[in-house]
Length: 136
Image 1 (cartoon, rainbow, N blue to C red):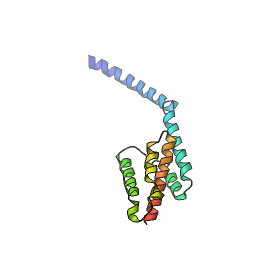
Image 2 (cartoon, rainbow, N blue to C red):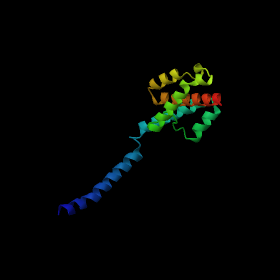
Image 3 (cartoon, one colour):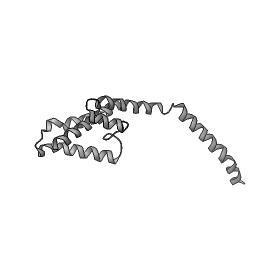
């Protein structure tokens, strides 16, 4: 008898949960702070990248998604590889001052807002483009 009772409540309860979830999503209330952060990041990336046509084009075609500052192992590995490469620029006869790896590290540590994150995102891309161009 309890299984039958449970089944009879399962459908209405799951239906109510779906309706409430849909209402919350459509209302935009819980997503508003997250959307504002995404917008601040994208705006900062667009502004900072605008000084270099190639970097700006990359971010435009990739919908301003992070290449360096995202979360997860792939992003950490990518940042680490870039910083390791920049730390060894003198091995290629390049000036470490041009890339200022220490300033990039400090800027990453000092990120306090989503906008800051967008700015360091582009700074890392610019450092990569400069390094790749110079090594070539």
